[in-house]
Amino acid sequence: MTREEAVKFAEHAVNMTDIPEVKEFYRMAAVALTPPTQEQVNKAWRGEWEDMREAYNDVPKRRCSRCKRVFIGPDTPFCEACGAPMTDEAVEMVMERWEELNG
Ligand SMILES: [Zn+2]
Image 1 (cartoon, helix red, strand yellow):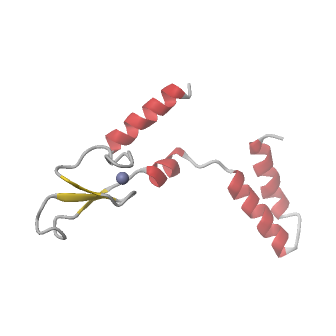
Image 2 (image 1 turned 180 degrees about the vertical axis):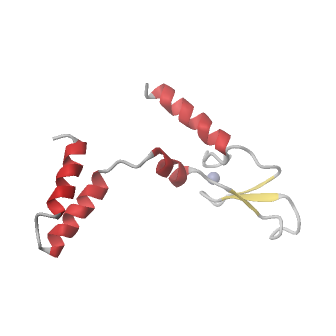
């Protein structure tokens, strides 16, 4: 059974029982077996610079929304600490690299 078939089976099986716990089980199985979309992956792993200027008396500091490390200086495309991409271009660069590596 492929993963796609397993998802279809689980979705179908939800309607084959009246037992709420079993329905819930099949629903959870279908969700767990469905791989995330590229968009969901991007969202989960992409970071954003939070402007900390106000908290630091106008010193141009920025905080990574992913790892919460604070840096001084202008925004960079990637977080220097955790490597999360911070801009659309950075996300695209990583996706291109990822596609190269995964054929
Ligand atoms: Zn970070």
